[in-house]
Every structure is written in structure tokens, then in C-alpha cells.
Amino acid sequence: MLRREDEYRTGQQPEHRVAKRQSGLVRWLLVLVGLFLLVAWIGYLSYPSSQAPAIPPAPAASPSAIQKPPATAPTPPPATPAPSELARYALDLINIDRQAAGLTPVVLGSNTAAQKHSEDLLANSYLAHWGTDGMKPYMRYTLAGGFNYEGENGYRTWTTRSGNKDPLYKRDPRQMLEEAQKSLMASPGHRTNILTKWHKKVNIGIAYDNESLCLVQQFEGDYISFGQLPVLLNGVLSLSGETRVGFAVDQIQVWYDPLPHPLTLGQLDKTYAYSLGKPAVFIRPPPPPRSYYTESVSTFSREVYPDPYNIPPNTPPLPQSGTSILETPPSSRVTETVRWVDATQWNISGNSFAIRADLSQIVTNFGRGVYTIVIWADAGDESVDLTNYSIFIR
Image (cartoon, rainbow, N blue to C red; front, side, top):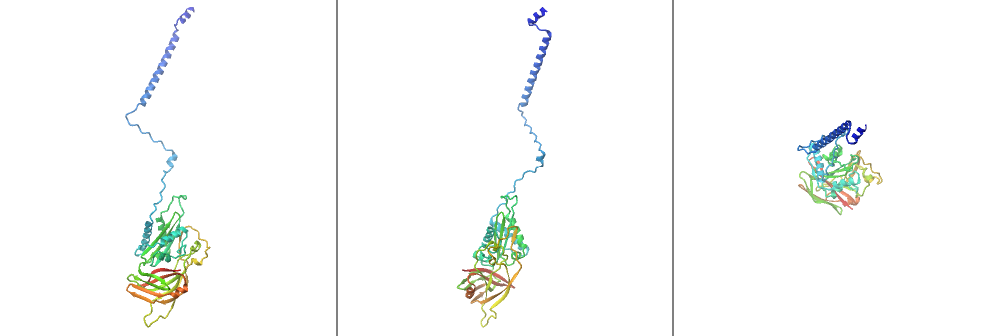
């Protein structure tokens, strides 16, 4: 026993301890080799390659993404056309309907009354042939330089915004003009005006915003020119000029309206079609020498329409919705008696005319107001109104 202790103390180990140490060293060597191989493999993977990198696959879409439709850009509002472009477009729509009826086209006129009236309709939210200043179409037309006959159509549409009242939403005014023309052609009175064969021009007024469009069509002829426009001076009417070939002046009529004054929206909303005021006097050629006329007055019946001046000013205006077009109400006819006055001068030579008549008694009886001169001419078997020219006596 003592001997073995001496051997242990001198550093000699038993055989089982030497075997354990050798197996431990092997394990550590294996671990080191494994770590070396791992580091070498990682380095190899991270070393740059000369080939282009592979494109990674796109991530799979989720079911919700597949079902969701692609986002679309909002439709931009239509470009705002120039006023002249819109007027030309409205003219084309008129001429398409005239051509379909076998009529000659009309050209665009230069009178500004229609445009001013459309702007008044839009600004004050109403529809009438009368303006807020109380004037009728032929009065506005005269003050804007017109001297032919005229016939007016009026239309207005109210539009509800779409797109959840998106303030950027705008309707194409050309589409609204198409709707207007379709509605006017569906109305017998307006259709007749559009398809009158004697029309030569049309003055177009267009005013619109994101809520409504107002359209005024004011048709006119082109069969007369004046050397002297009609004038009433000291009660004497005088005028001169020429008619187109094929038209011969037959008679002159003078119609009377009181001086216009502003009207309320309630009064304007109760109006429909318009006509000339009251017949003041009809003028005829003087009788040939040693002859005379057997009648000094004539009686006739005519249609009359509601007059806004006869409607109480406090009448409430109508609701604003949908589309509006002035439809002719049930006919109301009155019998009129009008006085004839013989002209003091009635010179007709070919297509030229020079006419004078003393109307001082007529002006005294009617007083201040608007005297509208209407010249009728024979055109074959028909009578044609050549001019509606208003003279203001204040």
C-alpha cells in the first residue's frame, strides 16, 4: 500500500485515468474541427458570386388583397369649354333639328340680349321671358341694337351634384345643352319657334354653374335694313329703308306696353309665353285720290298670357328643382279694337320705302311707355313680320 502511494505522489497515474484524459482530448479536437468547418462554410456562402443574384419570389398575396379591386384614379372633371365653343355647339344642335325638318340652317347672331338674359336667369334663380328689370325680349333686343323680328325660347335645368356632393364634380355643359334642346323640341310652342322657316339667325345665351344651366335662344329674321330707324318725334313716326327682294311692305302696326319696372321672383315665376302689349294703332297707305276707306277701326281676337304686372309682388317664388321650361298655359283670348291711321307719306319704290305718320293723338292717349313698331310684308301668299323695334317714351 505504501508503495502505491509513493508512485502516485511521484506523478505516475493509474491506467484508467490516462484513458479518460485521452478521450477528453479527442472530444475537444472534434469540437475544434467542427467549429473550423462551420466557419469555413459560412465564409464560403458569404463570398461574392460572379453570377447575377436570383430574383426572390414575389410574396404570396393574401386572400383579402386578391379580392380587393385595384384602385382607380378619380375621373377628372371635363375641361371647361370657351363660351364661343358652347354657343357654336348649341347652334349645331338647332341646325341638326332644322335640317331633319328640311329647313335651311340659321347662323349665329351678334345681339347680346340673349346672353344678358341668361346671366340674369342664373344669377337670380328664375325662369321667365320677362327680366328682373321688367323688360320683355323684344325690348332687350332693341336696346342691344336689334331691328329685325325676334322670337325667344327659354330653358333652365337644376342639377343635383353626384359623387356625394363632391365640390370638384362638374357636369359637362355640352351634355346639359343636349338635354335642353331635346326638351325644347318636345314642347310644341318651342319646337314651332325652332322650326320656323323664316328664321335666318339665332342669338344664343348660355349661363351655367355646378347646379344649373340657363339657355336662351332668340331667333331673328334678316329681311330689312334701315336708312332711318323708326323714331317717334313730337308724335310723328318716320322710318325708311329697304326690304329683301321678294318682300313688299304691306302695313305697319304700333303696340304699346307701359314703361317696365323691376319685378319680384314670385311675379316672374307666374309668367309663361309672352306677346306684344296692347295694339295702339295700325298704319296703312293713304287712299288713292278721290277715294277713302270705309272703316277706321278693326276688331280682332288674339291670345293673351299672364302678365307679371298683374300679379301681387309678394307672391312667393316657385321651388327650384328638376328642369323648367315655359309651357303655354290654356289659351285665353280677348277681343281687341284698334284704330287705323292713314300715313302722311307712303313711298314704296321697288324694295325701298319711306313712311311717315302722325301719331300725336295716339301718344297723347296712351302716354309714356314702350311703342313697338311692327312692319308686315307680303311674301307671296304669306305675311311676314320684318321687325319688332321698340321706342321708349319716358
